[in-house]
Amino acid sequence: MTTTVSFIIVLGILVFVHELGHFLVAKAMGVGVDRFSIGFPPKMFGFRRGETEYCVSWIPLGGYVKLRGEDPEEDLDWDDPKMYSSRPPRQRAGIVIAGPVMNLVLSFILMSAVFLVGMSIPAFFEDPAIVGWIVPGSAGDKAGYQVGDVIVAFGDDQVEKWEDLFEAAAMQTNETFSARVLRNDHVVELPMNLEDMKGEEGLGVLPVMEPVVGRIAPGYPAQAAGLKPGDRILSVGGLPVNHWNEMARIIHGSPGKSITIGLERDGQTMRLDVTPQTDEKTGHGLIGISPESRTVSRRYPFFEAVARGVERNVELIKLTFRFLLDLVTFKASIKMLGGPIMIFQVTGEAARAGLSRFIEFMAFLSLQLGILNLLPIPVLDGGHLFFLGWEGIRGKPLDIRHREIAQRVGFLVLLLLIIVVSYNDILRLLSGR
Image 1 (cartoon, one colour):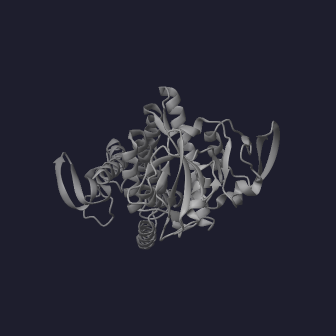
Image 2: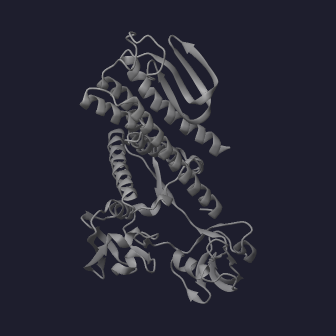
Image 3: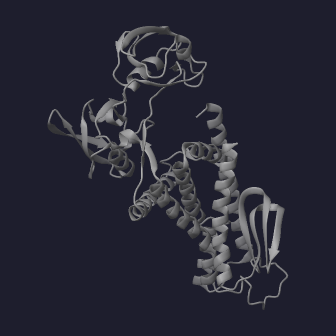
């Protein structure tokens, strides 16, 4: 229920703001607005005020503003000064671009609100970037990181805490660069390759994470064996462990095999035998435990919150365009795209995670909606802007027949994209990711 309600709220707000942009600019320019609809026909309910009908429609996949004279084939009085088509290209472009701009503005407002309300972040984000574990075969492993290294620089960025490192890694663009670590009171330079970081493990360097049980999943072997939250794992299968991932790696590699877990509970040491069950998707052994997860809330004063909100959105814009470039140059897989089902799921997760996370996700979606609508694809606002730019340069609109062909191609492209992302979503559902 939480997921459904939060999804309706998010979608309703984003669509309303987008269409409100078209509506307000059209009204300000004196263009007639025949209908303002949230959702697509058939109409659910509505009312008329002045020249405009305001309604909510049944298909909740967007919305639209019906401008007077927007369709060249309409049988209307073309001498009417409120006609959209009678306006010069720059005015029509102003109405078209207002929708995406409103989504971008909303995103900047919401992201600033996130920092003002307070962000829940992992507590270790504020800790020095001390390496606690290196994933075997990862970029960090290849570069020569060692447990206990203190990362002080990554590329051109100075690193004082884990948050700095994650931001520097996400924004790294140089194919080859160096990281600097403090090891045994000496600074060591580690050459790195950006290509190595594009794998599933990313950098593959993790903070210190004590192997302390935070949660026991009901119905799994850990519960049956008697493990409890707060237990500190000392050894697994006779091998001493000091990091959560070290413990998890041994368990994952022991599906269906009985192993002995040494642990400390309330100052007492004890041993428990447990047999990891086999995960049907990965083949890994699972016992149903998860680590302790500590978070802190970080709030900022108004002007700093606004500055950080702007900075965060600028980073997201860069990352979005970088991903789009990688997508068209086949450096990124189309399998990474998500659609309505994924958005539905993540919206529910964000709502359950708290107000700041919910607002942050809404800001992210609004930003993506604004950017994607500006892409020069027919049927999107960016496609209309392209046609208007063509008309402004040539002094006359594109031939209707050619425009109709372009609109059909654009519609087919979007339809194909919807099918692909929906297929991706279904595969994620089936794989449990």
